[in-house]
Image 1 (cartoon, protein in one colour):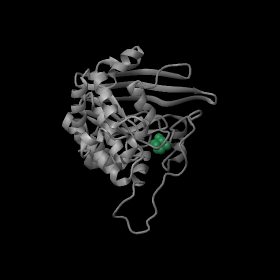
Image 2 (cartoon, rainbow, N blue to C red):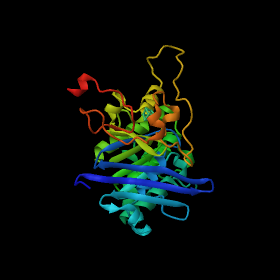
Image 3 (cartoon, rainbow, N blue to C red):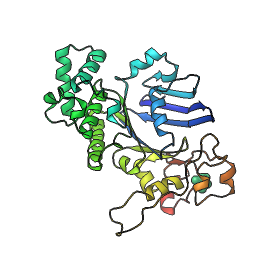
Image 4 (cartoon, rainbow, N blue to C red):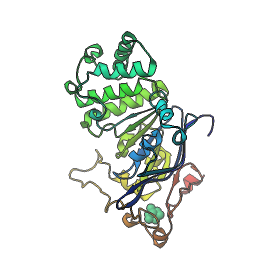
Length: 335
Ligand code: SF4
């Protein structure tokens, strides 16, 4: 682990033992994240991105139905080697998570203030008055108007966007070094989605906090993350600086995801592009490249050999993709 890296993941595998067979939902993922860096993890439903987020945080533990191998080192701690009690101590000051639906994080019969004050008293050992003052400050930081009044309201009295802001405030309460936001806007209206994503990007900048933004929507991570990792069927198939993936994608799956983003400048009635086919059943994935059954570039080698992540462009060696047949580098890129 380098001095500046906050998170280092090496060959992480999370396997669920189901009645139908083993499902390796995260299959050999390696990545690093520096302090203050933002990473977007994108892919379709079932690509393993949410399981990855939970595995990084240590929310999924070893047990009779689950096996985790590989290593996750977070702020110097080997997350999966820690006893459960020690691991829980990381939640709050080191890593926090925001989930898709704010109502899963909020107790409907407790006031907003109770959620925040309880967390602050537990983790920071503040007295009730100091915890209430800090709660008001946190609500203000996440853009909630009249924060003192909101403390005395119940979750159902707030809109979906306001509830997600409260959940973000709860996640920020202990000043985490890393925030994992798992589809934080999927349950919200489109206009509110943008506000929440912009809020997360602003908080990351202001607090020098690293963020992993998990999303099925490439558009959500555009302009808001430093780097992106594209996942397909449990594996990272492409990773680089976000701009690089958006402007010069290597993997056909990334290309297809980009092509399926609706464009405002498209002619009226232009059909939305979709990716034909379905992701593979992870109980019995295809033997070679897992994207081969859906890939328009697939050749024989793709169906027999699993491609490894590599950087085919000399000008951008950290732009890696798992594809046997990457597009040829242009003369301009080779310069
Ligand atoms: Fe397509 Fe082959 Fe590349 Fe897989 S390895 S993405 S099938 S070209």
